[in-house]
Amino acid sequence: MSTAAPAVRAVSTVVFDVDGCLLDSADGIVAGYQHALRSVGVPVPEEEVLRSDLGPPVGVIFSRLGLDEATSEAAVAAYRRFYADTGMDRARVYPGVAELLDGLRARGVALATATMKLTPTAQAILERHGLADRFAVVNGTDGTHRTKAETLTHALERLGDPDRAGVLMVGDRHSDIAAAHEVGVGSVAVTWGYGSVAELAATGADHLLDDPAELLDLLG
Image (cartoon, rainbow, N blue to C red; front, side, top):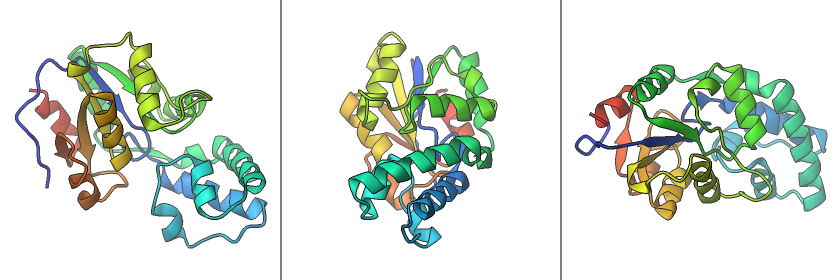
């Protein structure tokens, strides 16, 4: 069940996470993990384990699985090749997301992404699934901006530093909401992605929504 505060007005900018928010990309990500681990001779955990923490950078995932630095680097490279060739085709746009993006743009809201994908990968997957042209800025991680908060801040810089009182960050995991709090923007947690309702309810998000259409309703 969603919990939404009264309608929010004067929102100029909405920044979205990608995986679990715009796209259900879990199948391609998990297949990439499995391929990468096999390629470096590491036993592959059960699929439930690999699906349990979608969101962090792939190198972080492999480190958590106990890979040393050299093995992790090789696995990351294998993952990225697989994902570019095959994995991103296994994503799908969540129902109602395209309509949400179009509705926000029709209201004059600037749209951006802040994702833990590398920026070129984020651009490529959004293009492949027909969403890229809705965004004024597609932003992800790079050599300088490595955390979710840094990536969110960089997205806002690329948008011309809009007044943060008029910015919302939309995401499906605790890290998205924590970044919004750190950067000083409004936060919207969505339940159709990978975070549980319990996880999201504990984040202190300003709004907790169950359906993309509810965000348009929230803005009045």
